[in-house]
Amino acid sequence: MTVIANPPIRQRGPRSLFTPVRITTAIFIGLVCLSLIPAGGHLAWLVGYLLLVLVTCIVLRTTRREPGTWLGRRAVRRAVVGLIAADCVALMATPAPSAGSPTAGSGLLAFLLLLVVLNVALGGATQRVASAPDSIVDERQEALRNHAHRIAYLIFAVVVGGAVVVADVASTETRSWLASGFGGGGWIVLLELLFVLPGMVLAFLEPTHPAPEFRTLHPGQRHDRPALLAKALLALTVAIPVALSLAVVLVPVTTSSTIQAPTDSVVPGATSCREFFATAHLGTGIDASVPLHAEACWNGKRAFETYGMNAGDCMTFSSDMTIVTTTQCTQVTRADGTLAFTYRSDVAPGVMPFLHRQVTLQLIIDRNGNVEKFP
Amino acid sequence: MSRLDGRGKTPPTAPERFYNRIAVLRTERGLSRQALADAVEVNYQTVGYLERGDYNPSLELAFRLSELFGVPIEAIFSREPMRPMSEELYSRASDAGGK
Image (cartoon, rainbow over all chains, first blue to last red; front, side, top):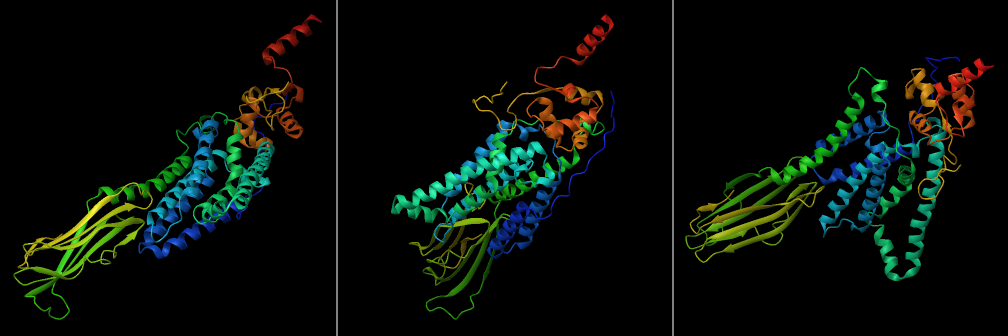
């Protein structure tokens, strides 16, 4: 019997730089950048984070993962597929962002981020065999990939085609649902199904990966360093938005305030006037600034406002990836002539809208111009 | 013999169960799965699936394995469960001694 201790290693063909997945990812990141750039002034934060996401994607793609890790288990992969399906349903049910309902947009963003994380997990679990070119798959993977594509095509045709046809012919309500469904997360779900459904089917079908053999391959190493780096980057990518969102809710609010003489002319019936500026700032990167701007005068009998806390004066907040909702915007002159301005708002991080905190800015000034309360 | 996947359907990649000695032959030669996979130009997971009997190779891959290990295909693959190699060798040696 001939024993071959060091068999010849055959090289596979080079991987193409422009695969459909890479092109789609680049287009997606570009679209996200374009849509977010006008939204806030913290462009450096955003660009830095997107670069981190990009580096994480590249490291994840170039890291060879051992088979048999927890993502290779069929039950885990099926759970990921189930979560993606549930996320798609949630995206379909979430209304499109609108001026009247900013919370809806944040919900869409949260589900979208979850979808990205789940897609990364799915890619790791299936080693992206579903979208791999012929040059880098072997006969087993090719057969599995082709089988997954056949099933995915059938599912897509039946689910999407069937839903569109039925909704279009059933009634006026279903027709309007069809139109509105594609206004929100519908397009995202459609793209997800178009590009990721074969991967989902493959993850569902493939048996549990064989047990890992890392120790045999690298007996001198305790850990697979590139894999550890990839895991650390992935954890960082997820942890940053979570930490910044928590900071909005947990870190103490910083306030700054100034009082100055008004620039406009003398107000009739007033002894003196002052202009009050205060700003409450929450968070970093994912942040919001809630300003109070009011002008008050007094004459020894009462204090009265000349500007501020009327309808429309409480809409001047600025927010980056946060949702600011004004809950109270009032100016009240009490019986003793004291004037109280109150600006109360609810601030929630955009990626975790279920977390929120209340910010109250209050200015109380008595009839003699003494400031009783001001940040 | 037809292998069922628990729901009464035959998986597309393994319509019939074949038994093999790939794990034994690989270990005898001190090869890792990765080294064997590189040598026969398949993914390292495919070697694991082959060893576990979850995947039946094509004729081409079977020949590549046969050439690599230097044994006939029937010494690697079988339709029936395979006896341990030591037992098989011992019985052959006994048969030869008896003659």
